[in-house]
Image (tube, rainbow, N blue to C red):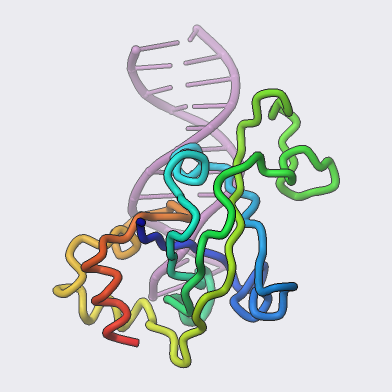
Length: 153
DNA sequence: GCCAACGTTGGC
DNA sequence: GCCAACGTTGGC
């Protein structure tokens, strides 16, 4: 059982979108970075929990918790010419890109903002999402970091 | 295999 | 809207 942090731009897909989705589930598609692809395909397991992060918005931070309900499978958007994530180079016989399915577990009444996390950086160790220049849309979170973030909620 | 140019991410 | 960081591309 591992912990993760998954970023989403709320303009594109927010925790509100997830909360109103059927069964409060969605597929996590559109990842086009190899490091993150490897996590989706190889490392994320059913039952793992992840922080749902809003990025590229007024108040970035942790807005809730999601659970992995389906492990890595080929990302259908890579094969859909109408999708903004279409990748003509991805061969269906040997898919390049992967998705998982997530389900909303908890919605935080008050988000734990990036600002707040930075103010408590000492308790969070070297949390990847706080690293300058970090651009990975999914990052692993240690159990200590997980607890420390929730203690701020 | 190097590395400059380019595109994207994402906080600010 | 700016721009630092960094992954990817492609010429050589």
